[in-house]
Image (cartoon, rainbow, N blue to C red; front, side, top):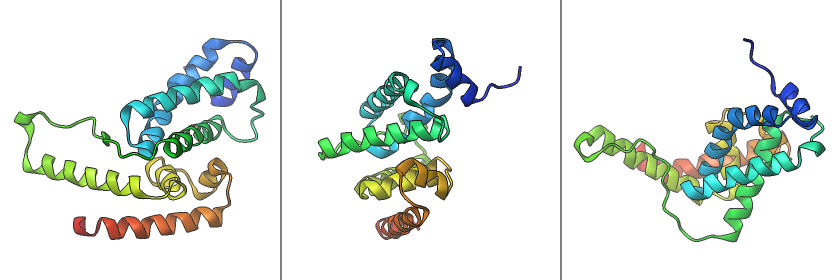
Length: 179
């Protein structure tokens, strides 16, 4: 069976078929969680943000006019929710990005070093200004093009390039010991 594209599912959901939206949720919930987790650095907050974003998308689906793809629109909602969460609470949180932390019996030197490196990257990413963190996450982790990142962040390609340049420079400095 050929895969149905998002535009068709959106039009079906807008026509009152909630099962079509359920397919969209299944297709995009992982991305929503991943982006939220990388932006806020906390598993529980990321789950909450992803769930809120998907509910908001459902509630606002009638106003979605397909001037961008559904995924771009959802990225916007997720990043806006994450920005709201980050600006509301600036306290340090535990960063639990590693789902595959080995058990004590599996802890080899390579696993420990990998986890330390991931923690260093996660911590360095969390210190970036939100505007830089968003472009790093969307471009490098999610694989969006400069134009797609600009669309999600409602900025320009030169602004995205500038944020990426500054973020990369800051991350390179903070992660110097891991080179």
